Amino acid sequence: MSSRILIALLCATVAPGVVSTVAAQNRGSDAEWEIPRTPDGRPDLQGTWTNQSLTPIQRGRNQESLVYTPEQVAQIEQGYVDRFIRGSQPSDPDRPAPPTGQGVGTYNNIYFETGNRVSVVNGEPRTSLITVPSNGRIPGLTPEAQARRAERRESRSQFAQYDH
Image (cartoon, rainbow, N blue to C red; front, side):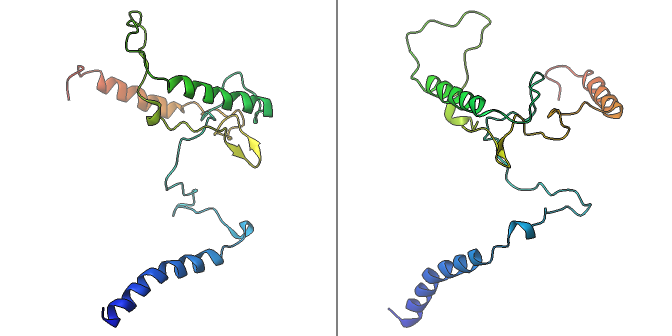
């Protein structure tokens, strides 16, 4: 084996370790970190996001608290485990058909990425992913948005189910 090939192989195996070690050394403190912004100044939310949380996007109408109690968290997370175990059981091939008009279930649990934990923010298990407004609910549409929605609905109503 020529020395050039040997040196190239050595560089190819050593370089990634050196680069990752150097990159990991200079991590700034949290106080130095700034929220990335878009050119117009809004928070930059680009990237990869996940839905893997048992916390709903918006708080239930009867849920007033911003955070769950430890007992509620335990109940929610155990409920997920129980549903997962039930949903993972083999289907009985000899079971009768479900009653007419009722659901037949869904696809395999492996295709659902629900997560198995309640989201925790600043050490608090949150009752919703939305925190502003304070009720944790998605705000209603503005009158302008309602008008646009009605216009789109009217525009689509002229077509039948199979028209494209």
